Length: 217
Length: 187
Image: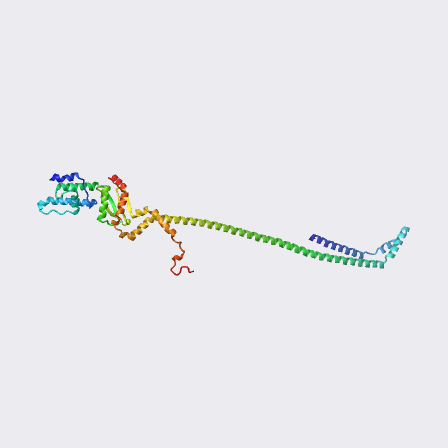
């Protein structure tokens, strides 16, 4: 049951109580009608119909005298109090039930609202966490790519430098060995021992030497 | 007698002794011949003794059958030497150290036997050669040194170095063979 239904029930109960109190107040302040018409009738000339009516009125007044009225009033008051008590009890039950339902409703609504908010909060945390994880993953991926690129560049550079050093060493190796030999045994080599080597080299270059001598001449 | 003595001078080719290696020596001989000429001309007037000739001039005259006392022989010899000095091919040979006369003569003989009979040699020094020599003709340089020989043998030297590098242990590794006695096998 929603709040509108509860307010409708409470309003209905209050309207019923107000109507009962109004009718009771009206019954208490109503003037007796016997004195008015009787005085009028005494001033007018009696007629047969009127006489009958007057007789009936007198019988009625005779039956519904003040004691009887008071007794009826008491009975009505008791009945009214009984009804009021029953209605008050019903109203109390309804109020308790309504209060209970209101509490339950409020608890349910608050719980639901809190659950929704908690779900939103949890979802926000989950999204933020996922966002952070994605960012970290992207960062890690980028760092890994940069590392691989840097590693590749360093390997290439190292390889190129190594090849350059090897090429330079190979190019200068004969000169290095020659310098080493010259420093080691340069003063101990006798030219007489080299004559055979020199003559062999001269024989190897004989044709070129003759050719160049002829050209020069 | 004069004709007989001039006969070998005109017909036979001029012979350069092995001791006469370069233009400097020829210039020395020419100056010596000039001095000798002047001395022999003034000898009857001054009544002095004939000057002594050097061994190189004596060897040159002997090798060609000249008699230095005769003026035609001296003039012919001077003319030949001048022609050789002006027209003979000259090669420059560099050694790491000063060569001995034996080495110079051997190389000179080879050149005069195989290249040109009047080849002149100019000796130079290049300590960087280490061994061998560098021969420079008018248009070319023939590097017959140890460095050039090593340059030619570079592939072989590379193979030796690669073989040595492959056989050498990696740096930082220790083998039991490299440990001192008593430590091999211990943790």
